[in-house]
Image 1: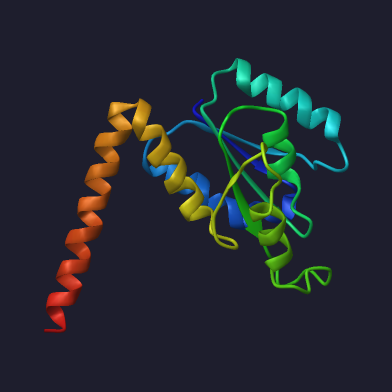
Image 2: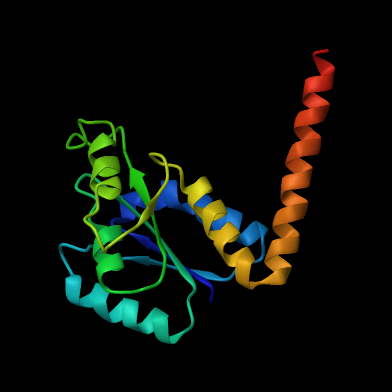
Length: 163
């Protein structure tokens, strides 16, 4: 397993499944965990130790509202952590549109960094993880280069249609 995906709540599944789909597209092994940093911190600590021993390279963590999950994970490991601030429009507590979660992640204190992507953007979180993994794994690097070329070709074709 190269990537661990953490969700702060089952309600985050619809947002975070996009990250899983991108990782699958690149044939990257991952495993998902639903663990609240606030409600079951001991389980979170044990799980982080477990994934470290299994050789995980990077963690993607999505959370909404106070969004402490990525920061708490980062405080317990030296693995890179990518945070996904999550907003659910059906959540009557999330009146700030995900800005609260975004600020919670980007305002991490010194010495406990997390990379943060846009609100609900687990797609970019997975791509950032893929970019980081491509430094170490040549097969992922080759797939990423091919993916980027396909995007470029698609965009060039679309642009030509308008000229």
